Image 1 (cartoon, rainbow, N blue to C red):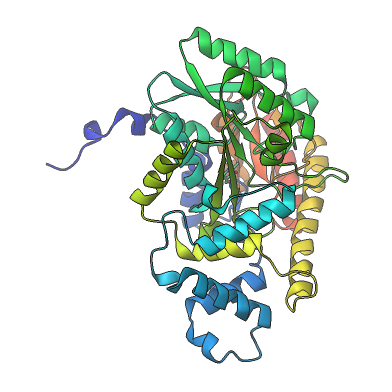
Image 2 (spheres, helix red, strand yellow):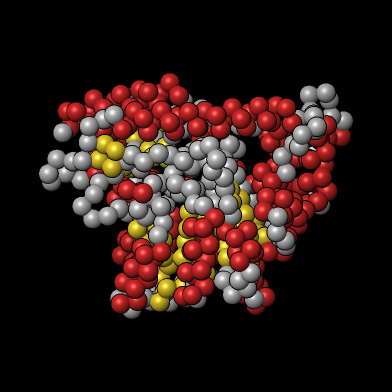
Length: 451
Ligand SMILES: Cc1ncc(COP(=O)(O)O)c(C=O)c1O
């Protein structure tokens, strides 16, 4: 007898992942029927015409085909050739062999150098795990933390569904804390306390708090004081912290900058708050979602817990090696004065400049539509506008009707969580600038009819 749905575990059946849910399935069906679909549902930059960074692909090509390195011709810049040679020497066997479970040590040393230079703090290559995108790191941390059905993880509402889905899958409980929409989606101690108390009253044992900074889907950026507040809260309650920092390069507002949880933790001197931080090759200006590169850095974990994490990682042997090459370039790009620097900086600034202007265009355009309002996008790659709906309609109905009418694929707010009685949708800022205007116009025309 074949496997039936009744054989599948309840946790899997309960798991939902809205970013690739029924609206996307319908969009793909429409596309197969010949309709043009504008995918604004997922932060996948190269699916929306963003070009790969030349230097990264040069290093990757050279590492993939080492014969090119034997006698490199003038096409290959010297720094790309030496980076490729260094990776092959550092990994000993190139990208066709498994690496250590934590990832190639030479790359982990480069990650540690990157953290030291970014934050001015110490960093240990042995506390770094190279992962298949940030997702795998987040899943490892949640796997470690969820030990029983009472265990809860505090997650922002709205949140990125990787968290809700993985917590469900691992049999834990999600304890949502609300972000303040009226205040640029800021995070407040009052909301953290409320969520913590509510979870406690339901018999949930909170183990950790997750923070996404810059925020997905909110686009907000935390400042130093906000981060210090979260760490003090975590310390008081005895919680671990998961800091999802995959959008650390995506900050658009003049005067704002990225502050890492690791830096604030070290400054605070807390030795009793365990921290898991995540970074990725998928976002920023690299946008290499398909290469599945990223890392997890851990702090303040006892050696015996570290050994368990390493064991867990070793069950899948190691993260993919092309992703480890991408992670190497993420943390060790060409520096000023090196042959590839000028082109690298031009590509980087071009992509970030485009994202900044699309963020502004989108916010301005959406806020002109009656019944739609959105906060400024100060970071990440998304807007999460509030939409007023006719009685009886949900944001899922609205998104599906918009898709059918216009070909625009968005994600309903329900997939990320929202305050009861409100409706939202999430859109990326990734379509090319010319298309952003078209997207706003199509949404405006649709909304007028829908209301
Ligand atoms: C907040 C956040 N964390 C993690 C990820 C996972 O990215 P990846 O696994 O590609 O690194 C994403 C992807 O969109 C994200 O938005």
